[in-house]
Length: 425
Ligand code: S3P
Image 1: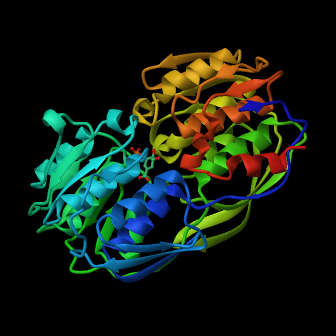
Image 2 (image 1 turned 90 degrees about the vertical axis):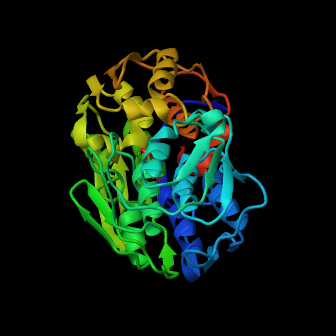
């Protein structure tokens, strides 16, 4: 797909549902008793993979696009799937569902696409085994496909070496089926949607600092959930609105949970003009509309505790940094290497092709901004967030930027190109 420089961005965009929250609403609904009604569900390929996995385990899920209705069958109501559960491109589906499957009384197999088969699963296999789970990759590897033989589980007190909501959520879900309390302590706090939503479904969950705990549950109960918009999807518009001169856009329905809002803080620190309007609560999560105006930006240092709160936004923040004056340093973000692609390597490659001055590091990168960018032939590296981040880079670059596999936006934001072109003047 080809992209060109635009004069300005104007108008309003309404951000579709949060991917993390959409996954969880279906998963928790499936193991709760009774009906869960979800509005604002993200109809992206990843979340549809979660729906199809639970349908394969006997859960009736009606998706009429406006509302997703999950007719949950209780904590022990899943049935053995007839075939391999296909998690597609979704790390969240693969890792969270493993926690649920570990405590069932049947055996299941999980597999996904080529990218999923490369993502590290030892991060959930090791702690799940400490809980008594029987989970392994083929030939004893720690990669998908995974075989999980349901077992009796015991609660554990786990200190995770990485801040990861996928690890934390996997273990808390397994903890629902365990014989005692399960606690997960992370080095810094990752997104807390599981803690918030499991508690709304009736589980006994507590959080203190970087530790989240759950007690074994007798039953969860179906809920009505209105999923807020995904700040990770809003990120592309925030960056585009700041970069493209003479722009003013209203980005509606943005989830601003403090475990996810690091991109807003970084943009403000870089001199970006972002106003939070109409702050409210939706589905138990804080939400606002963001008024973004083009701004002259300067570099900053992004490191430490803020990293998990903007981990998925780093590719587009790197693009923003290339348009800012001075140096931006991103540190403590080695997790970028094990996302849908090695995001340190591929962001460096694409930005360099466009003429930016960027040096990769083992845990991040340094971008010396201010050089004019030019169009180039770019790859998406099978990563939806790379495809979308570089459309933003293209909007400020001279010439044509061709992005291969730009359709990958489908994974997390099916209407991205339609919504973006509606803002382009
Ligand atoms: C997610 C957690 C994050 C994030 C991913 C979604 C979640 O991954 O990158 O896109 O929904 O729990 P990690 O937990 O591996 O950091």
